[in-house]
Image 1: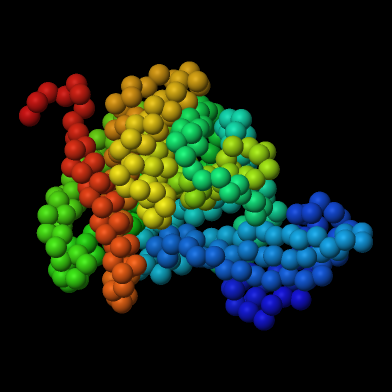
Image 2 (image 1 turned 120 degrees about the horizontal axis):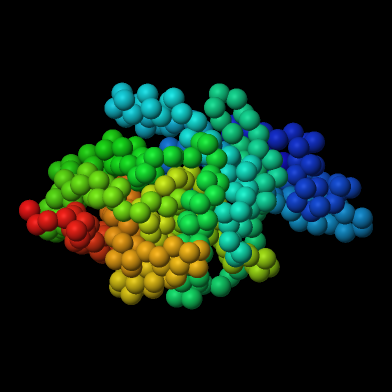
Length: 391
């Protein structure tokens, strides 16, 4: 039997007993398994994610022959953009564009397709147990709950991930393997973040005087000034990125979305396919670099050296697939996408109403340091191509 709060946790999808039994048998690969109990555990997710409506696990036990076995699945609820709580603050033209497409289904479409031929050895997708249409433009995607290795990310793992991302980018681009719901215009992946997240929410928050009057931010006058300048430069950065070679990207290839399976059946399991399509070469490296730093699990001081490791490994990966790209262009594509995606969202503005404790003050200092690093990358980003004449 489910725990008392299971229906509340599952929200838009409440599996019945037959569905639970089918899931247990699918996970255990035992058609005769008999479920003896199950429960739900909710997982945190980014409220600002337009298409994510909830994350949770279903965990249970089942009797197989004369023994009891544990099983679990990971469930992601996805929704159309019109269900996003911030949808109404979008400009009218953006609301019309978001409401007209089916890009919100992209992750489910990726899992259905399996990306034939695009994933090099070492990368795989999670097992898909079922995709449930909930009606009203909502889906529940029921995935393998990947048992992950306890190994910590190190330079070798980062380099391996960057190399495989480079190989994937070339293969996916050549094979046109993404589903039709993917972005198909150069630069659309990055521009969608700019129009959907930065313009309606992040930029207004960062320019508000009361934010910078907070005791933990009040001394950051120079950072505020530089952020204001970087806001003005973003349209030019976007234009410059679209002049670079364009390759298909995962779109959010942070370490948190490159799971390391404990059984070693692949180097990485790629999850959270929500922003796929063509982008500047090297774009996926940005979130690979910053993901753990944003989570407070990587020293900001290590980012410059790691940055160079990722660029070199990615360039080697694309070369393995027959594409030669200049290292400077890879770094430029990485940096531009990283600045647009992360420089304006690194400060935890949504938490500034919390009591100021020592731990919270330390957390904000770390995010200030991260923001400073990202802003410096943005201000150093070349807005001209090397062949363009001096102005």
